[in-house]
Length: 451
View 1 (cartoon, rainbow, N blue to C red):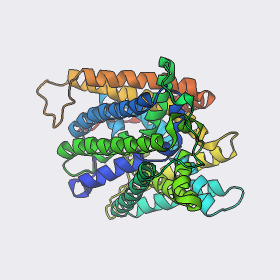
View 2: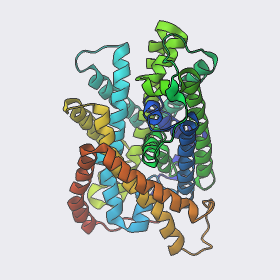
View 3: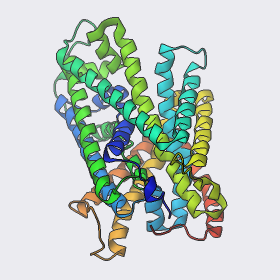
View 4: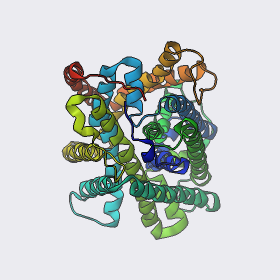
């Protein structure tokens, strides 16, 4: 599989960390804490599940560090799956990522951006969808203009998102619970949460940590990926876990566990208590910045799998069109943008909450392929000689990837059960790609080209 040439490897460690942190630190930290609090029995358990979620993210990042540093490619997960399981599984993943996983995730975050942007600048009955579509169009266009412009915007959005999250933390540590804060009750005392409830809490925690795997698509354009990818993944993970730890301590400081459970918009409520009437506007701006950071980073990484697929499949060669001037896959970006806009239209006119629809649609398919990617590490280790050069080796192998495989299977099951019909819809769309994959693979000369 061909990647951009070394002259196109323009991303530094800072750029990579900006993408990882920018994609992960998003709107989840403002929406999921109350749902996590409902499924734990004490403040200690509440903080514990957030730290455990960070540990799972770190384990996954360590696995990806070995995969990405050993097999650097702009195709990322598509490349790993193709090498491990063959071209058909790789192409099925590309289908899933293009129709379900990445485009659905971008649409979900775009809807959240639209909700808060519409509070600042109302655009009528369909204002949320209009704002969502504008964010996708503008950021796709920015990525088409060039990688340099996109990464500059990513660094800016990421800095603003981090500042916003830190502002929430500072507000919590320095402020005091006022009359608007939910009063602590006897429910704040420790109780025993069931294993099932703690498992559901972890589902929401890991949704909040979601997106770190996007770094896999940077390895083909990262400077010295054999050395730098592990740095990006590990340093980025530490930053995210530290930020989330601080924010959740701040939530507990102001509201207590029962107050978090009772809050419907915990970030807005916290800033409202500390900043007054302007708190809602400030919070809307924070959410807009974090959402734009996630959307831009996801657009950047998402198009790389189309590019890799175009290199491997003769019938889809146009997807591999690469702009030397802009150092970006132009056609892949356009197609990704069109599919995402289609999902925005679908979410707008579907029944129920558009964000929930998109999350339910993507989660089961995502965790299914995440399990296969974790499994590929075992396949590579067994297939290749023990002394195969590896710039980074996952610590405590095989325990570390085995734990990650179990987590992925558990979350696949939980997301199907929790998502209900939306999850089955995503799996149904995945199934529709099987005939396409079987037909396309017959004409492929080679689905995996060595670096």
